[in-house]
Image (cartoon, rainbow, N blue to C red; front, side):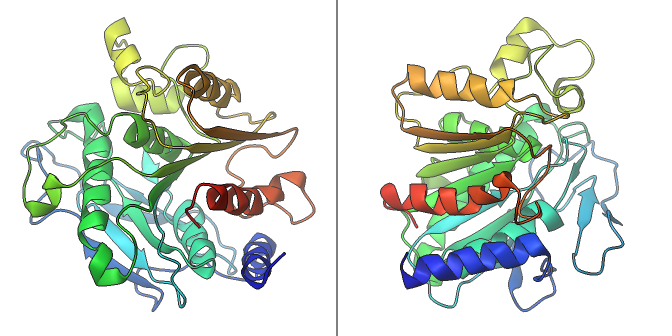
Length: 319
Protein backbone atom coordinates (compact mmCIF):
# COMPACT_ATOMS: atom_id res chain seq x y z
CA UNK A 1 0.00 0.00 0.00
CA UNK A 2 1.54 3.31 -1.09
CA UNK A 3 1.43 6.64 0.74
CA UNK A 4 -1.69 7.87 -1.02
CA UNK A 5 -3.52 4.64 -0.31
CA UNK A 6 -2.63 4.95 3.37
CA UNK A 7 -3.95 8.50 3.43
CA UNK A 8 -7.17 7.45 1.72
CA UNK A 9 -7.66 4.56 4.14
CA UNK A 10 -7.03 6.85 7.12
CA UNK A 11 -9.48 9.44 5.81
CA UNK A 12 -12.18 6.84 5.24
CA UNK A 13 -11.60 5.28 8.66
CA UNK A 14 -11.80 8.68 10.36
CA UNK A 15 -15.10 9.46 8.69
CA UNK A 16 -16.49 6.04 9.49
CA UNK A 17 -15.48 6.48 13.12
CA UNK A 18 -17.11 9.89 13.24
CA UNK A 19 -13.87 11.82 13.76
CA UNK A 20 -14.38 14.15 10.81
CA UNK A 21 -17.59 16.18 10.73
CA UNK A 22 -19.56 16.74 7.55
CA UNK A 23 -18.76 20.02 5.82
CA UNK A 24 -21.29 22.79 5.49
CA UNK A 25 -21.76 25.03 2.48
CA UNK A 26 -20.26 27.88 4.50
CA UNK A 27 -17.17 25.95 5.59
CA UNK A 28 -13.82 26.70 3.99
CA UNK A 29 -13.85 23.25 2.34
CA UNK A 30 -17.04 23.86 0.37
CA UNK A 31 -17.69 26.61 -2.17
CA UNK A 32 -21.25 26.94 -3.48
CA UNK A 33 -21.46 27.42 -7.24
CA UNK A 34 -24.52 28.13 -9.40
CA UNK A 35 -25.80 25.27 -11.53
CA UNK A 36 -27.91 27.30 -13.94
CA UNK A 37 -27.47 30.90 -15.13
CA UNK A 38 -30.55 32.41 -13.54
CA UNK A 39 -33.55 30.25 -12.73
CA UNK A 40 -33.64 26.53 -13.58
CA UNK A 41 -35.87 25.55 -16.50
CA UNK A 42 -39.58 24.82 -16.24
CA UNK A 43 -40.35 26.47 -12.92
CA UNK A 44 -43.35 28.55 -13.96
CA UNK A 45 -45.82 26.47 -11.91
CA UNK A 46 -43.55 25.72 -8.95
CA UNK A 47 -44.95 27.09 -5.68
CA UNK A 48 -42.94 25.18 -3.05
CA UNK A 49 -40.44 26.85 -0.73
CA UNK A 50 -36.99 25.40 -0.21
CA UNK A 51 -36.10 24.52 3.39
CA UNK A 52 -33.47 22.66 5.43
CA UNK A 53 -34.05 20.12 8.21
CA UNK A 54 -31.65 18.54 10.70
CA UNK A 55 -31.70 14.74 10.67
CA UNK A 56 -29.60 14.15 13.79
CA UNK A 57 -28.57 15.86 17.02
CA UNK A 58 -25.19 14.10 16.96
CA UNK A 59 -22.56 16.90 17.18
CA UNK A 60 -20.04 14.77 15.29
CA UNK A 61 -21.96 15.15 12.04
CA UNK A 62 -23.59 17.87 9.97
CA UNK A 63 -26.53 15.67 9.01
CA UNK A 64 -29.01 17.83 7.14
CA UNK A 65 -31.44 17.40 4.27
CA UNK A 66 -32.93 19.92 1.86
CA UNK A 67 -36.64 19.82 1.01
CA UNK A 68 -38.48 21.29 -2.00
CA UNK A 69 -35.36 22.33 -3.84
CA UNK A 70 -35.93 25.47 -5.93
CA UNK A 71 -32.30 26.61 -6.09
CA UNK A 72 -30.23 23.66 -7.30
CA UNK A 73 -26.49 24.19 -6.98
CA UNK A 74 -23.07 22.60 -6.76
CA UNK A 75 -20.80 22.66 -3.72
CA UNK A 76 -17.15 22.39 -4.72
CA UNK A 77 -14.51 20.68 -2.56
CA UNK A 78 -10.95 21.18 -3.82
CA UNK A 79 -8.18 18.78 -2.72
CA UNK A 80 -4.85 20.02 -1.44
CA UNK A 81 -3.06 17.79 -3.94
CA UNK A 82 -5.33 17.24 -6.94
CA UNK A 83 -4.73 14.11 -8.99
CA UNK A 84 -6.63 15.31 -12.06
CA UNK A 85 -9.90 13.47 -11.42
CA UNK A 86 -13.27 15.02 -10.54
CA UNK A 87 -16.41 13.46 -9.10
CA UNK A 88 -20.06 14.53 -9.02
CA UNK A 89 -21.69 13.32 -5.80
CA UNK A 90 -25.47 12.82 -5.86
CA UNK A 91 -26.97 12.29 -2.37
CA UNK A 92 -30.11 10.25 -1.77
CA UNK A 93 -33.36 11.03 -0.01
CA UNK A 94 -36.07 9.03 -1.77
CA UNK A 95 -36.70 11.91 -4.21
CA UNK A 96 -38.50 13.59 -1.31
CA UNK A 97 -35.43 15.40 0.02
CA UNK A 98 -31.69 15.63 -0.68
CA UNK A 99 -29.52 14.32 2.17
CA UNK A 100 -26.57 16.61 1.53
CA UNK A 101 -24.75 15.87 4.80
CA UNK A 102 -24.23 12.13 5.12
CA UNK A 103 -24.31 11.28 1.41
CA UNK A 104 -22.83 14.53 0.15
CA UNK A 105 -20.35 16.45 2.27
CA UNK A 106 -19.03 13.37 4.12
CA UNK A 107 -18.27 11.64 0.84
CA UNK A 108 -16.79 14.82 -0.63
CA UNK A 109 -14.28 15.23 2.19
CA UNK A 110 -13.14 11.63 1.84
CA UNK A 111 -12.67 11.85 -1.93
CA UNK A 112 -10.95 15.23 -1.69
CA UNK A 113 -8.54 13.60 0.76
CA UNK A 114 -7.73 11.12 -2.02
CA UNK A 115 -6.89 13.97 -4.42
CA UNK A 116 -10.20 14.11 -6.27
CA UNK A 117 -11.96 17.41 -7.00
CA UNK A 118 -15.56 16.97 -5.82
CA UNK A 119 -18.84 18.64 -6.66
CA UNK A 120 -21.89 17.84 -4.51
CA UNK A 121 -25.17 18.22 -6.40
CA UNK A 122 -28.26 19.74 -4.82
CA UNK A 123 -30.91 18.72 -7.34
CA UNK A 124 -34.58 19.45 -7.89
CA UNK A 125 -37.24 16.91 -6.96
CA UNK A 126 -39.72 15.43 -9.45
CA UNK A 127 -42.99 16.01 -7.59
CA UNK A 128 -42.51 19.74 -6.90
CA UNK A 129 -44.26 21.03 -10.02
CA UNK A 130 -41.38 21.35 -12.48
CA UNK A 131 -42.45 21.21 -16.12
CA UNK A 132 -40.01 18.34 -16.77
CA UNK A 133 -41.55 16.24 -13.98
CA UNK A 134 -39.44 13.09 -13.48
CA UNK A 135 -36.76 14.46 -15.81
CA UNK A 136 -36.11 17.53 -13.59
CA UNK A 137 -33.43 15.73 -11.51
CA UNK A 138 -31.77 14.43 -14.69
CA UNK A 139 -31.73 17.94 -16.11
CA UNK A 140 -29.70 19.00 -13.08
CA UNK A 141 -27.35 16.00 -13.27
CA UNK A 142 -26.67 16.46 -16.98
CA UNK A 143 -26.13 20.17 -16.47
CA UNK A 144 -23.77 19.49 -13.55
CA UNK A 145 -21.50 17.23 -15.61
CA UNK A 146 -21.37 19.80 -18.40
CA UNK A 147 -20.59 22.61 -15.97
CA UNK A 148 -17.80 20.48 -14.48
CA UNK A 149 -16.29 19.93 -17.93
CA UNK A 150 -16.43 23.65 -18.61
CA UNK A 151 -14.55 24.34 -15.33
CA UNK A 152 -11.84 21.68 -15.69
CA UNK A 153 -9.15 24.17 -16.63
CA UNK A 154 -10.21 26.63 -13.96
CA UNK A 155 -10.07 24.09 -11.12
CA UNK A 156 -7.20 21.93 -12.35
CA UNK A 157 -8.70 18.58 -13.34
CA UNK A 158 -8.98 16.56 -16.54
CA UNK A 159 -12.23 17.01 -18.48
CA UNK A 160 -11.97 13.36 -19.55
CA UNK A 161 -11.75 12.09 -15.94
CA UNK A 162 -15.15 13.04 -14.55
CA UNK A 163 -17.17 10.52 -12.56
CA UNK A 164 -20.60 10.37 -10.99
CA UNK A 165 -21.32 8.73 -7.62
CA UNK A 166 -24.80 8.42 -6.16
CA UNK A 167 -26.48 6.84 -3.15
CA UNK A 168 -29.98 5.39 -2.76
CA UNK A 169 -32.30 7.57 -4.88
CA UNK A 170 -29.16 9.52 -5.79
CA UNK A 171 -27.86 6.18 -7.08
CA UNK A 172 -30.85 6.06 -9.40
CA UNK A 173 -30.07 9.55 -10.64
CA UNK A 174 -26.38 8.64 -11.06
CA UNK A 175 -27.38 5.53 -13.01
CA UNK A 176 -29.69 7.61 -15.19
CA UNK A 177 -26.88 10.11 -15.79
CA UNK A 178 -24.61 7.22 -16.82
CA UNK A 179 -27.15 5.65 -19.18
CA UNK A 180 -29.31 8.58 -20.39
CA UNK A 181 -26.54 11.12 -21.05
CA UNK A 182 -27.71 11.33 -24.68
CA UNK A 183 -31.29 12.18 -23.76
CA UNK A 184 -32.15 15.81 -24.50
CA UNK A 185 -33.87 16.92 -21.31
CA UNK A 186 -33.52 20.70 -21.72
CA UNK A 187 -32.63 23.34 -24.26
CA UNK A 188 -29.02 24.59 -24.15
CA UNK A 189 -28.62 27.75 -22.12
CA UNK A 190 -24.93 28.58 -22.63
CA UNK A 191 -21.62 27.30 -24.00
CA UNK A 192 -21.29 24.63 -21.30
CA UNK A 193 -24.29 22.84 -22.79
CA UNK A 194 -22.30 22.10 -25.94
CA UNK A 195 -20.14 19.73 -23.87
CA UNK A 196 -20.82 16.03 -23.25
CA UNK A 197 -22.97 14.96 -20.31
CA UNK A 198 -21.46 11.45 -20.31
CA UNK A 199 -19.54 10.61 -17.11
CA UNK A 200 -16.28 8.68 -17.51
CA UNK A 201 -17.02 6.31 -14.61
CA UNK A 202 -20.03 5.72 -12.35
CA UNK A 203 -20.37 4.48 -8.76
CA UNK A 204 -23.70 3.40 -7.30
CA UNK A 205 -24.16 2.96 -3.56
CA UNK A 206 -27.20 0.91 -2.43
CA UNK A 207 -28.95 2.35 -5.48
CA UNK A 208 -32.58 2.62 -6.41
CA UNK A 209 -32.51 1.29 -9.97
CA UNK A 210 -35.88 0.11 -11.20
CA UNK A 211 -39.36 1.60 -11.09
CA UNK A 212 -40.97 -1.83 -11.53
CA UNK A 213 -43.46 -2.81 -8.79
CA UNK A 214 -42.25 -5.45 -6.38
CA UNK A 215 -38.59 -4.47 -6.67
CA UNK A 216 -38.74 -0.68 -6.78
CA UNK A 217 -38.29 1.47 -3.70
CA UNK A 218 -41.93 2.43 -3.32
CA UNK A 219 -41.34 5.97 -2.07
CA UNK A 220 -38.93 6.88 -4.85
CA UNK A 221 -41.18 5.39 -7.52
CA UNK A 222 -44.20 7.30 -6.22
CA UNK A 223 -42.30 10.59 -6.14
CA UNK A 224 -40.96 10.00 -9.64
CA UNK A 225 -44.02 8.67 -11.45
CA UNK A 226 -47.09 9.17 -9.26
CA UNK A 227 -49.65 6.59 -8.18
CA UNK A 228 -50.49 4.73 -11.41
CA UNK A 229 -47.77 5.16 -14.03
CA UNK A 230 -48.05 3.49 -17.40
CA UNK A 231 -45.80 0.57 -18.32
CA UNK A 232 -44.05 2.87 -20.78
CA UNK A 233 -43.22 5.39 -18.04
CA UNK A 234 -42.00 2.65 -15.73
CA UNK A 235 -39.72 1.38 -18.48
CA UNK A 236 -38.46 4.87 -19.36
CA UNK A 237 -37.37 5.67 -15.81
CA UNK A 238 -35.98 2.26 -14.86
CA UNK A 239 -32.22 2.67 -15.11
CA UNK A 240 -31.59 -0.96 -16.06
CA UNK A 241 -33.47 -0.51 -19.35
CA UNK A 242 -31.87 1.05 -22.41
CA UNK A 243 -28.27 0.75 -21.22
CA UNK A 244 -26.09 2.02 -24.09
CA UNK A 245 -23.15 0.09 -25.50
CA UNK A 246 -20.72 2.81 -24.41
CA UNK A 247 -21.97 3.05 -20.81
CA UNK A 248 -19.05 4.06 -18.57
CA UNK A 249 -17.29 1.59 -16.25
CA UNK A 250 -19.50 1.15 -13.19
CA UNK A 251 -18.93 0.22 -9.54
CA UNK A 252 -21.87 -1.02 -7.45
CA UNK A 253 -22.09 -1.72 -3.72
CA UNK A 254 -25.12 -2.88 -1.71
CA UNK A 255 -26.02 -4.83 1.43
CA UNK A 256 -28.14 -7.97 1.11
CA UNK A 257 -30.12 -7.06 4.24
CA UNK A 258 -31.12 -3.61 2.93
CA UNK A 259 -34.66 -3.19 4.20
CA UNK A 260 -35.44 -0.06 2.20
CA UNK A 261 -34.04 -0.65 -1.30
CA UNK A 262 -34.01 -4.37 -2.16
CA UNK A 263 -30.62 -5.70 -3.24
CA UNK A 264 -32.33 -6.92 -6.40
CA UNK A 265 -31.96 -3.35 -7.66
CA UNK A 266 -28.19 -3.75 -7.73
CA UNK A 267 -28.50 -7.21 -9.28
CA UNK A 268 -30.72 -5.86 -12.07
CA UNK A 269 -28.23 -3.12 -12.90
CA UNK A 270 -25.31 -5.54 -12.84
CA UNK A 271 -27.11 -7.90 -15.22
CA UNK A 272 -28.02 -5.05 -17.58
CA UNK A 273 -24.41 -3.85 -17.67
CA UNK A 274 -23.11 -7.37 -18.21
CA UNK A 275 -25.55 -7.80 -21.10
CA UNK A 276 -23.82 -4.86 -22.78
CA UNK A 277 -20.39 -6.32 -22.00
CA UNK A 278 -19.73 -3.22 -19.91
CA UNK A 279 -16.93 -2.95 -17.38
CA UNK A 280 -18.59 -3.42 -14.01
CA UNK A 281 -17.58 -4.41 -10.48
CA UNK A 282 -20.13 -5.23 -7.79
CA UNK A 283 -19.53 -5.75 -4.07
CA UNK A 284 -22.43 -7.20 -2.09
CA UNK A 285 -22.25 -7.48 1.69
CA UNK A 286 -24.24 -9.86 3.85
CA UNK A 287 -25.14 -7.12 6.30
CA UNK A 288 -25.04 -3.35 6.44
CA UNK A 289 -28.62 -2.22 6.00
CA UNK A 290 -29.48 0.89 4.05
CA UNK A 291 -27.76 4.25 4.03
CA UNK A 292 -24.43 3.21 5.52
CA UNK A 293 -22.40 5.75 3.53
CA UNK A 294 -19.12 6.23 5.38
CA UNK A 295 -20.71 5.89 8.81
CA UNK A 296 -20.74 2.12 9.26
CA UNK A 297 -18.69 0.99 12.25
CA UNK A 298 -15.14 0.50 11.07
CA UNK A 299 -15.20 -3.20 12.05
CA UNK A 300 -18.19 -3.92 9.79
CA UNK A 301 -17.35 -5.62 6.47
CA UNK A 302 -19.42 -3.02 4.59
CA UNK A 303 -16.92 -0.34 5.73
CA UNK A 304 -14.49 -1.80 3.17
CA UNK A 305 -16.31 -0.32 0.19
CA UNK A 306 -14.45 3.05 0.06
CA UNK A 307 -11.04 1.46 -0.46
CA UNK A 308 -12.53 -1.08 -2.85
CA UNK A 309 -13.84 1.82 -4.91
CA UNK A 310 -10.52 3.69 -4.91
CA UNK A 311 -8.61 0.58 -6.01
CA UNK A 312 -11.16 -0.18 -8.73
CA UNK A 313 -11.16 3.39 -10.01
CA UNK A 314 -7.38 3.32 -10.36
CA UNK A 315 -7.63 0.30 -12.64
CA UNK A 316 -9.69 2.52 -14.95
CA UNK A 317 -7.27 5.43 -14.86
CA UNK A 318 -9.44 7.59 -12.65
CA UNK A 319 -8.21 8.09 -9.06
